[in-house]
Structure formats: C-alpha cells, structure tokens
Length: 590
Image (cartoon, rainbow, N blue to C red; front, side, top):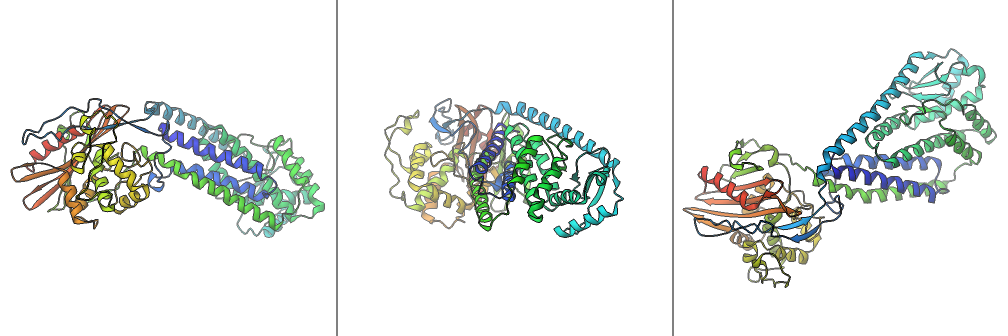
C-alpha cells in the first residue's frame, strides 16, 4: 500500500468517524435508536471508498500527500540544446517547469509490510475467535423443551420471520448469542429454560430474532473485515465499539416497542441476569451476544429505563439527520480521487495490433512506444504494460491548450500574441512577448497557463471531455493540472487523440486545426514531414517523465506516434525524441 493510499484511507475513515460521533452528541435527542445505529452504515460505505477503482472517483489532486503542489520554473539540466543535423534546427530542447511535492514514496514498501503484518495479526485473532466459536458449535444440542420451541415459533411469527433458524443450547456459553450467515443459530446456555421464566425467554428470543431481522449477522462479518483492514486507525476501534452498543440499544428499543410498558423493567432485569456471563469479549466477535461489557450494559439499562415510544416527528428528524450525514460524506468522496497519482490504466483491445520488442532503443529507461499507421489502421506497440499506463502529459498538452483557446476566441489566427508579465524565468526565450508559434517552439509554459486562466476551469473541463482526453481530470488547479498533476493520459490515448485531432473528429474549426498543425511542424526530410511536441515532467528538480508525441506525413499516409520514458532523474522530452527518431528511421518511416 502506497503512502498516498494509506493517507487517503486514514483521512476518510477518521473524518467520517469524527463526524458521526459529533452528530450523535449534537443530535442526541433528535435521533431514534434505530437511526442512531443506521448512521454507522454510512461509515461502512465510506470505508469501501479508498478501495474502489480510481475511474469511479474523479476529483483530482487537491489532497495529494504532503499538501498542494506549487510550480517553480527550474533550469536543472534541461536547457541543453540538441541540434538536428538535417535542417540545423534545435527544437529538441527541454523547457520544463518543476513542481514541488513531498516525496515519501520510499516509505511505501515499509508501510506495506507494516500494514500487511498488522492485518495478519488481526486475521490470526479472528481465526482464533472463529475456532472458539467452532468448538461451541460442536457442543451444541437441540433444545428438547417443546414449550420453548412453541414460544420460539410465536416470536418468529410476530416478527414475520419464515426462514429456518435453529434454536440450540450449549454448555460452553453463559449468555445467549446468535451467529451463522447461511445457517443461523440462536444459542442459549444449557438448562436456561430451567432458571428462566417463559417471559424472560421470550424477551431473549425477541432480542436475538431482531438481530436476525436487521441483518446484523452479515454486518458483523463486514465489521470484522474492515477492522482487519483499518487496524492502524484507533478511531475505527472506537467507532465499532460504539456501533455495537448502538446495535444492541436499537434491538432493545425494537423489543420494547412490542411489549407492554409494564414489562419494560422485566426486560431490563432479564438482561441484567447475564451481566457477569458475557461471552467473546474480543473485538473480533462474529456473533451477536445478548450482553458484552459492563459499561455498555449500564448504558443500555439507562436507555431502557427512560424508553418511550418514538413519535413520527422524531422519525422524520432522524431521517433528515441521516441524510445530512450522508451528504457530508458524499461531499468528501472527491478526496479519494487523489489516488490517481498511483497507477491509472486503460483497457485496450485492438485486434490489429502488433507488439514488438524495442527495448534496445530505450537503454536504461522504462518506457513505451506506440505507432499507428493511418492507412492500415494498425498499431505497433512496445511495452504493452506501459502503453496503457496514464501519466502526466506535461508540455505535450500545449497542443490542445492552444486549440481550446482558439476555439473559445481567447486568441485568433491573426492575434495570438501575449505580453510578457515581466517575471524573470530561467530560460531567456521565455522573458519576452510571445505568440503562438514562439510559445510552442520554446514551450513557454506561462503563455499556455495564461490561456487556461482566461478560458476558466469549467470551459477547459468541457473541451477535455469533448475530445475524451485521458482521465479528463483538471482538478489540480487551472495553472498546474497538466504539470505532473491531476490530468493524465496513456501513450495509446496520446496517439488516439492526436489522430482524432489530425482528422478533426472533434468538429473544430478547420483553420484552427491547421494553425496548430503549423505550430508543431518540426522538420522535413526527403518527402516526409515530422510534426510533434516534446514534454518533460520535473518534480523537485528531477526529470522523471519524458514525452515525444506527433506524426509523420509521407506520400499517401500518416504515422502517429507517442513515446514516453520514465526515470528517477534523467527522463526528458529530448531523449524521448531521440528514441523516437531512431525507431522511425529504422522502420523506414522518417
């Protein structure tokens, strides 16, 4: 488990527990017993959120581990020019903007070991409890007292329960309990019918049958699972202890509703009889015992003593409070979409795809190459696993940033200039007024950030959804979402989107498409023209992500490509471009 994943799990679980505890205290007299217990099901739902597929949740990077990101231009070693011998150009220069982020990834292996070890210990405790329960199951015997069976049938009928539930006794227990998901047992202490009256037995049976009716047996297993997974969060232990108490109080209230007020004290006294006979004190119990700790028993007796029938107004208030809490939790769900900073993969299944080992071109770099032949509609892919992995597009996204700005009228084909903001950047070519051609040629980040700010986030989101760009996540901030932030795209998607751009599947203005094509034209050799854009992802001054995407126009055909490389420090767009040109040359394409 990564540092981020653990952080998200801890945040979500702690936040929901704290909110529930506060609501229980603030609205103590506006919540019925049943709905106070139901609040905890929101927690159970929330605990599943960090383990849902990332494509289900999409909010982005505002809650990345270590806080929000800030952008800082850096020259690092990225200003080195790489001249192209064919035409004397120098487009393979790396202009990157570094984002600052706490890098705690080195802790991930250690945290994973600790987390898994803790789960194994908790699982061992659960197995131990299960073995104890199994020994009780082996000691069970059918109750022979027909009066008790007749009473049991009456209780089931009153609750509308038709399913088969086995009523047994055991010499190994001293307090009634219910367990069994597929075959349910209600176990009474051996000879309980001898020292309990029929009324007292009725109270017990009604209580245990309510557990069955409320599906508390299934809930127990879910609680056990989450307590194993979230063992490291003490608030979860507190929450489940309170949940168990609320569950018993809800069952008590349900039974009391069925009784005459004159019998309330008798019901409470029946429970007190088992005060010193509780079973399975372990927090990992998979059963529903009639009583547990003395502290919880005291609270239950206090609630029984002041019990009154709930009014319709109280039910309405309870439902409103429940919905309020559900809304608060739902509003926090986007926090989990910070998890796309981990792996985010796409599904790709195209029959006209050839996979080829091109590892000799990549040397020490972990990367992928995707080539698409437009005339044959066929893919050639190196590194199937990496080709479907989404990473930040960095400066390759500037193609679409410029296109969106043209489409929205922020710039036009005749007026693309933006004045320099007089800030000093580490690249001399950035410290001057820019137009679309110079900004694209020198990858002037501030120019495209300016376009995005004028366009505004909601419009950017609409355009990105329109062209189906990667994970379509712009929540990382209008200035930084494409700079090692929330927006991510895979090499295969880069090629697909670029092909759709080239053929104008988006239905944009043709003049705008042609203008962008002109800005990314790099060089011509023989009868082939190379178009493309590099991108370098820099985090904390280290170049970790290098892109080169584009296409080659030849006679009667066009080849689209995307190369991505990753490295701890030296992955740059210029290197990705070198790799790409070598492959294209050997393939006889360029």
